[in-house]
Image 1: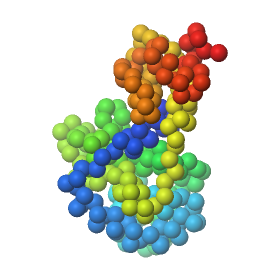
Image 2: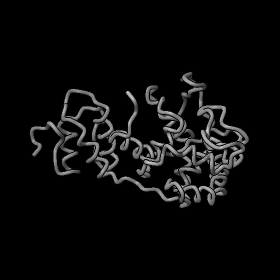
Image 3: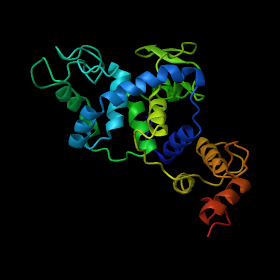
Image 4: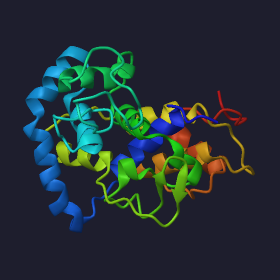
Length: 259
């Protein structure tokens, strides 16, 4: 099943961002990366104004894909002197090389033209999508987002469709760069409040005291961050429904007590 921007995904992205702890020994490596993004801010802002995409999303993508090198394609870091060779291949589709960075970047970001959710979850969903959602099937958080933090230890695709459970990413994750940009007040972020997350996700969870459901587990985690004290067992039973009622005023779908 394809990974989608579901209420469960929204809640998970926000929870991971809220509980993210950057590995202290990585901070000396992260600082120059952030500074390099900031050094290109004026060009990212110009592209942001044209496309309606946050400048820091563009800058973070440029950092991960091309090391913030304005002589390379935003798609994948290939030289602007020709169309892309690595995937995605033969981009930009129109025009004649050599390309300007702006022309190439507009082509790379074209698929985001109709995306308008630039909250933290919306941004992380699209950042992860730039690299692919394959890590969900491996049961780990994507290093493309979470490398250099408490949310990632090991496991990496070392080639297309080739996964190594022991390989460790040496690249700083996109979510960590976003955290540092926001922690230093360099970039704004739109955070989804926990009350909204609980309501949005909770309305997709059905009262089921004996069945383990990952959506229910995510709801328990989000409610615990907001002050509940639940066993995160994935069983949407009486305790979980009671906690949901305290936050939202109603019990879970399927609970006989629901109004």
